[in-house]
Image (cartoon, rainbow over all chains, first blue to last red; front, top):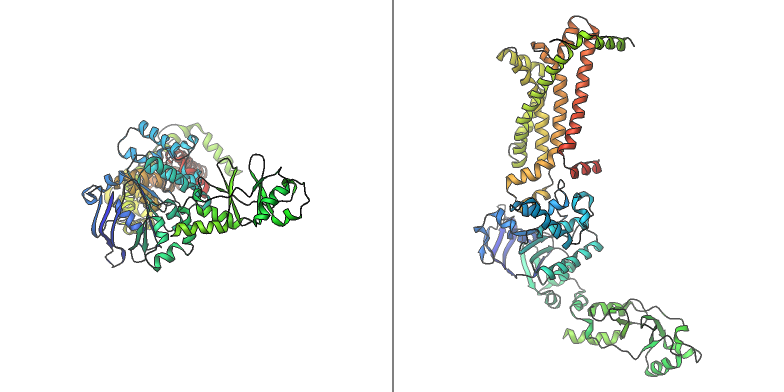
Length: 371
Length: 226
């Protein structure tokens, strides 16, 4: 547990980096500091490993005042990941990762064996061990940065905008990787970013900073999106927060309709009886393995000659599907909005259709979770 | 053609290759003075450059002094020290050190200063102490630039060590000084060719030293940046 008790950093010229910070970072969870540039989030992070010394207040790690510890020893016990990794260009990947163990006095062989384990943990090929940082892509370098921070198995990991210099696709995969690692390792992670989406994705708790080095709100991502404390936070989290908040509700709670799903071998009459008479404008056609084929409209069904199979009709594309077990309401809504039929197709893990849900039904579900 | 024949004749005279005035002896003296000058300069300039570069203290003073020293006429330094200390090895080596310290010092200082601040931040953040930052990060990363400064210095030293002849302590300069005095063109040319050849060999040696001392990651990075 890391506690800030009235911590502040005010420079001699009067510049306020952090005005007054009272905050508790829970152990084993990911806490994200987010805010516009110059709001003190990075300074707050750097105060934890004494890269910046606070001018007021106290910071404790597991109850111990960090000022009572030698800065170098304190830092060796805290993992540190920075933007663009900051890898040593003259050292191989393996030796970069082994840096902190070597500082701690491990034997070279043991430190390198540990480094090799970490390469595997963060998803790097063993063949890359003997390479040098400039031979790696930005995303791979950042993985090495994470491995280096984890090498001595510190309980705390400080990450200062680690993924902001890589492209969005790589960033998403690095975020996924971090979530996976955290499930396995349960580190106390403090993560700084200016990207609210990244904060919502990674954080168990989010601290939103406002310009002038003040903490505006400290909450779970869900509550932050539901109840921003003021206009600043509301505008910072973005005006689509309502939709984004849906990512916290599982799609598995939706009630899916199965009565509008038909086999490609079925004759049009069957669908006509069931759908058109019911006032439903669309029916979903699936193949023998229940994989979606496409939508057929009520008008097509009415006009089609009797005896024809549904598979022989011209089908509208089914767009993209959502996975009932893993996806959120946000993914289901997205699928419904993008579907030509205005209905989202829910599938199980093998991609076979479990049922469909209309925008209207989704609206009802969203209404009930927003209560 | 004339010059070439003269040179071939001069180099092929067996008398040239023996005795205290022979090429091996003169070359030996020349290399000895040059090495002494370069090693002393390195021993002075690298530690000072590392300290000023690492601490950032005295950087301006060092570079100013180095630039001032660069402007000193080497031959003037030589005779000044001859007046103070008498004829011998001391004035020669002092003059060479005055010549060689500035490029090594400036390159060492700038090499350490020029280390990416993010790398220094990472090093400190991982728990390195000042000395560890210097020897595990700054020195290795600055090595290519330090070697470049040493190479510049070495070539200048080899070329300038000819002045040893003026104060009567031999070296390849002997041929040039005597050749001039005796109007012996072949001797003058032969001496010059030997000095040039030694300078070329020095450059090659530094290329080898670079391969030996600079981490492959830095060599390739420099090649990619070029």
